[in-house]
Amino acid sequence: MRHQIDRQIQIIEFPGFHYANCNCLLIEDDVRCLIETGFHESKLEDLQKSPVQLIVNSHGHGDHCRYTYLFPEARVLMHPSEHTFVGSAQAYLKEFAFDKLVGQEWLELFLQEMHYRPIHVDGDLQDGQEICTGRCRFQVLHMPGHSAGHCCFFFPEQGFVFTSDIEFSEFGPWYGMVHSSVSDQLRSLDRLAAIGADYYISGHHVPVVRDPGGHRLRAYRNTVLERQRRVAQLLYGGRSTVEEISRELPIYRRLPNPKPIFWAYELMMVYHHLLYLEEQGYAGHDGYTWFPTKTGIGAGHLSL
Image (cartoon, rainbow, N blue to C red; front, side, top):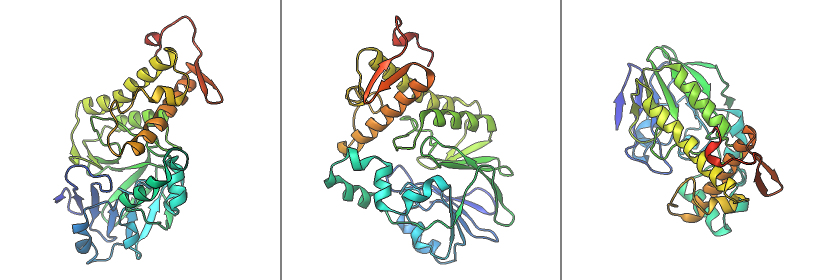
């Protein structure tokens, strides 16, 4: 499904949610440009009829750069923090900590489900960089948290931000990679809110998100703080390791299938919340053992 939102810009919508697909933008301009390549496979033949000269990938997850490798003539841009793991299956699995957290039997299956293919990146995306395709211009916003190199793209003349995996879901933000970060995620959400865009185009679910009062973005941000409170309560209630806290499922509440994969995500996201508690001065650790650093108060009294 395509939606024309400007003379040069179309949304290629992927209805619903699927792990290896996303909403994409096609810019038909002097330079034919794709932002993301996680469109439905039925769109591939049509998109290949005319040369794509530029591909801009917001980050290196397989659902956002699924078909990048099938456009060898295109110049591919991505943030430098993503370069290593998109070029190697081993590095990709390591960035998810799957080399430590997931059984060997799941690794190849995960790569298959993500339709992983190594990608050669030709150039970097940097915060504040302006990309011009002819009549259309947009600005790169480095918005880490989800991944270290996650980027959004601001189209000032059209008034929208393509937010990629800041996707306004009820579940909230996902930050389950080794170099993900809760504090970075919160700062990115605050920065996005400060832009004051007319609307957003999300990488998943219904693409066009209008949020004039900022209620949806605040609710999305608040899911991070709710998880932080749950993790703090478990830590201050006597759980002392990532695994002990994760067993209470403060992130997912109930693990989806395949459970071994989502259990790894739970562990990594709990770990990042503990790091954020440490950053705030509420937690410390000695090796794998975590402990509260504020005495005589309960978790409910922490300013999270």
